[in-house]
Image (tube, rainbow, N blue to C red; front, side, top):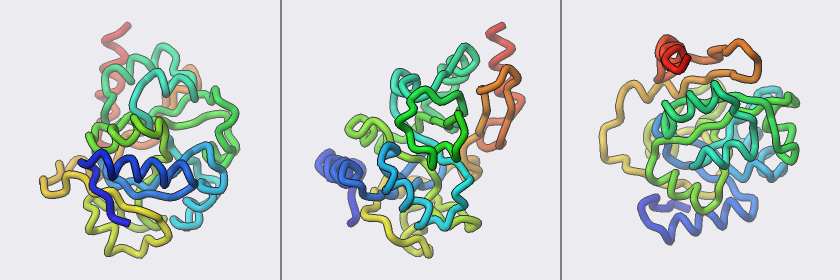
Length: 211
């Protein structure tokens, strides 16, 4: 099913698909994402099968509001500083898990979880209907991420229930090709897990400014 992310009626259809255990492909401010209800274990298992992803690799969760983030994980002082500086945007924050209803498949059996608020209008509007969605990239593992919906449809990725088209006619910022920067704040010493769109030095500069 092909849905238009700019149409509310299509976003409502997308919400219903997620609610009933379906898998969607959707735009973000970086690459196209593959997602489902993070609380639905069977749907999460399907994400791993579709991507041919190693079970031991955790999956991030997207939402639209910091208050929703803090329902699932502890942000703490550093996390809130980074969240207020970079969200919505291409920063994934890994923090200590708060909501133990999140399946262990999401966290790879760890007591931490990664979360992000994306700077994409269509996906933010969708999240206002469904609150949370898994936020992994829409590609088979070890293959290139997809920047446009047309790339997803031409790729080997199969088994999803709907694809949500975003504002694909606009050229993408080339920096978005790198995906989000991932930081781990679950321990006293912040760790840069992956440097993406946001540079490591920018992260440390922001934290230093708040001291």
